[in-house]
Amino acid sequence: MYTVLVVDDNIDTKENLIELLEENNYKTLNAEDGKTALAKIQQYKPDCVLLDMNLPVMSGWEVLDQIKPEIDAGLIVIIITAFSEIPMAVEAIKKGAFDFFDKPFNNEKLLLAIKHGFEKFQIQKELNELKIALPSQMITLDEFGSSSAIQEVLRNAEKVAPTDYSVLIQGPTGSGKNLLAKYIHQKSKRHQFPLINVDCGTIAGSLITSELFGFVKGSFTGAEESKDGKFRAADGGTLVLDEIGNIPYEQQGKFLRAVEEKKISPIGSNEEFEVDFRLIVATLENLENAVNDEKFRRDLFYRIAEFVITLPSLTERQDDIPHLTKIFIKRCNLNLNKEISGISDSAMNKLLEHHWPGNVRELQHIISTAVLLAKDIIHTKHIIFRGSDIDKLSSLVNFPIKYHPGKPLRDSLDTLTNNIERKYIKKALAIADNNITRAAEIFGTDRKNFYKKMNKYGLKV
Image (cartoon, rainbow, N blue to C red; front, side):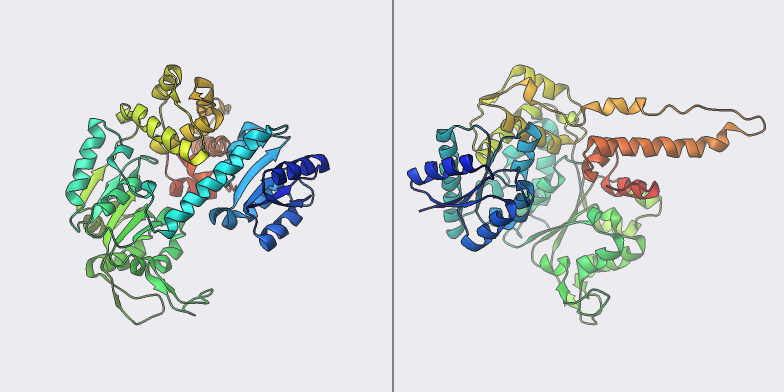
């Protein structure tokens, strides 16, 4: 018998839910505030939680954040609230909620959602126990598209996959670089060994060496335990590095030796370890320009770019948008327990007319939101571009230009330019809800450079 925890500070709602559940052979627990709910989740390990968001002591949002490990382990969470808005539903699903209901809710639909949640978890559990890989874990050609541009990319990927060549994958943000890296690993002779991803763009330059090479206990302040680095974790398999240009120039020599000699020494150790890995580098930065600007070692560039694949932007392969949309609808139907049958012609035209600064990743996010909002088919109103007001950026700045005799106008140009750039950065952050990666896309640069500009102007999120 499954146990359901009902969390609601409204006594009538709580008692009605308990009665409904017990009539349908569920065992029940209950709580009137978030703190009590959290304690009961940890103590009694319920199978499902019906969670109100507007709770005393600790809100439903706080509870949802704190039970992420339980959700990952299979806890079904269904949100029930009287204060709902579309963004709230989207955010709750992203945080791991299985479904979302407005008050007053339909009893039959709620019971059906609970049933579907348990069915999905049971299937997942059985697959894990049998150690059967889910289809989503395997990359298929279908996930890339069928345009001539992407087919050329895939032909090159299949040629290089069986080799041990280092591969440099170039392309704009969100274009599918990591997906292609996974596909190359999957097609390689190393596919049964680890695929290790490291995003150098999110690691402080001073910490990248310890992340890659590892360290021994006591080798520096904070090194309380020894740790193997990513080089050793990838032994036998493939190491994928995102935004390798973030590795400080003075540390690139050590990295080059590790790649060439396949030997590494953890920080603070004299012991040397042999490692065997295939290197794939994914970047949106033009590394050749970085070499010419003396920000990236030329010898390292040639070592990591034994084979180069350039991914086109989604705008350059618009023929793939209808195909990818179908793929994402199918995937979202499974994840969200929906049955969206397709997309209207007008909604598809809206997708085709968009300029896609975030490329395939942006399309995937747009479709996931649309599937969540739609009932049976995706219409134009369900296609929501979060950065649609980017065109308003140009109206932000209205600085008067004053001329003072004897003082060239050019003297004040740097100040004016900095003021303009600062305002553009603030606006990009506002559009992206302070998501730095998304703001960088809107601004038109990579995360690392955008973060540097934020620091330059004293901007924080």
